[in-house]
Image 1 (cartoon, one colour):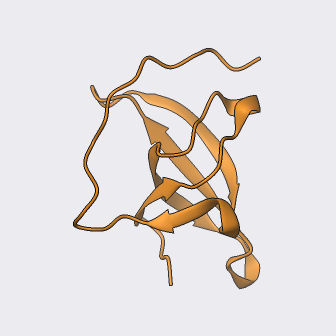
Image 2 (image 1 turned 90 degrees about the vertical axis):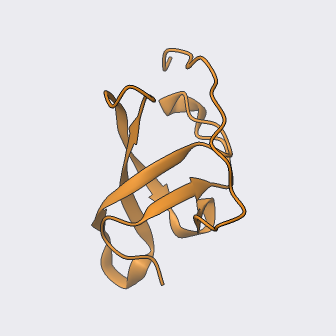
Image 3 (image 1 turned 135 degrees about the vertical axis):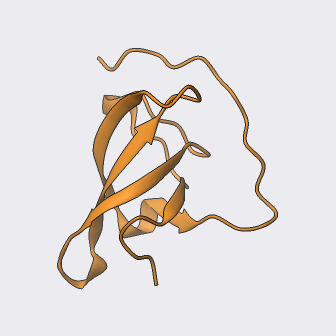
Length: 77
């Protein structure tokens, strides 16, 4: 079960937020029954990129087999 302050990995793109599958964020709020999460996404220098609503099926827990990967973010449309 995902908890507040856990890091998550997106499993689906969220184009309206400029987010792609594989992006990593931190849960800052859990919606009832863990149906969705408010997740804060950061640039590698620690600045907030966006806070987005992420449905439970769009996220998974970070594992010890994950590696950070850098990409240049696109502005949300």
